[in-house]
Length: 251
Image (tube, rainbow, N blue to C red; front, side):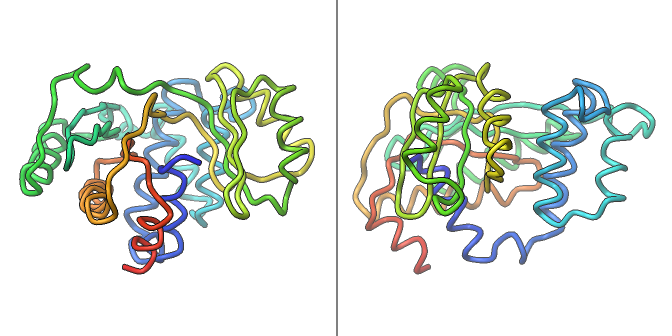
């Protein structure tokens, strides 16, 4: 099970999304804007937009906010044209590789805030490609096993072209090639499975292990980065142990 999925679950349990709902809505809106700008405003023919809308609805984002974001993306509202997607690379505590995905209307502000956060924690930004080679982009789906048993999920995923299916406690994660995303999604929808998370994400080719105290240092830096307004996602190559997971939940 990927550390990113574990961490997302912990963040939800700790109530971070509720405490910072305005920031959450901003991130959801930016995903919709970029999806609509790249593929048009019709979710029926723009799968990335359909997914972004689903995530926004799951996050209780008001309908008018969703529609406004679509209009920004299609150019009906001119504000959307100023947003751009950028990925920055960094080296976190103990050499952990970081990939920081941003959607921003001010590239200078975004990079300055990221650099400040990393430097303050004793970390550094990296040149493009310096750590990116340690990751690959993949489709992922994350849902409770109460919605679909592991055996059935495995069979469905393999038939849909997935690469890996894993189970941890009461959660199941499916990983697959980017091009398999729609096929896997359609098959899950056909059996009424609504993933808690689904999308395209960066997956570490090889994870590194640290002790609990070191892992907590890394995750605190990641949490600081995720709280920045321009940051959409932070990916890393840290393998989170059960002890580190428990410590994170207890904080």
